[in-house]
Length: 113
Image (cartoon, rainbow, N blue to C red; front, side):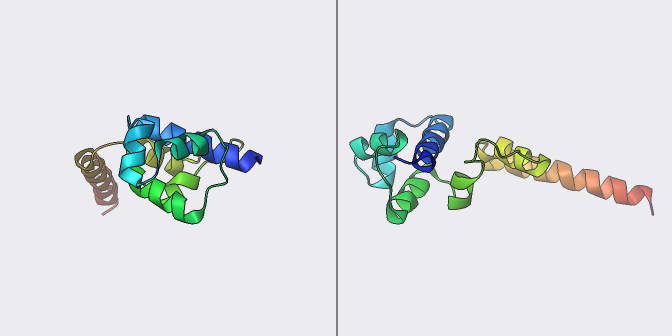
């Protein structure tokens, strides 16, 4: 298989493990067979767009999130690092971080007024 298919499988495995899901659980959530999930993660299957869509739904992520940083040589900018840190956090944590950021920006604006 191509290097891209292998990197894609590695990325799916990485996200699955970050979400503390087994291959069986991801298979159930995505409606795909566990063996297929394993083959995709190992880069043995040339996955279709339809199957990728099922996998991202099962993982609870977007296609953009799946393909983000799939190139190991790609450098993460600060916004990408923040997004990556927040991606596995709860909605409550994300709301708290947004609130803190807004307060910092409002405080900064008030210094100049």
